[in-house]
Image 1 (cartoon, rainbow, N blue to C red):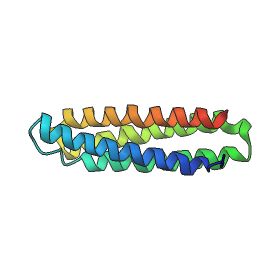
Image 2: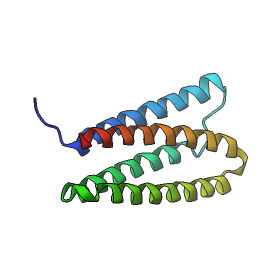
Image 3: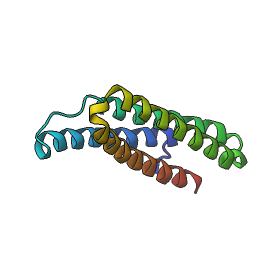
Length: 127
């Protein structure tokens, strides 16, 4: 069995998740809600995609040389990511006030999906 680079494996999974969420969002807005997707939807998807890839890459790179630092780095990056997401959400609320509830819902769904994938992937790499 060929060992795959953890970052490459994660990037494939996060790309599949991103495409699935984008298609699911488009279908939900167009078919179920009978309205066009909110204009901030692409920004939310790209924000989570880019942040997830960057954090996983940095975590892998910084902890490969010293596995004992993993807990410190994971906690630091999780905190920084949470602050970044909060600031991004506030900016989105100000930019698209009329869609605040839909933005919060889309943001929450993306947060749960991407964080779940990150946790599963990080735990898999630790074993």
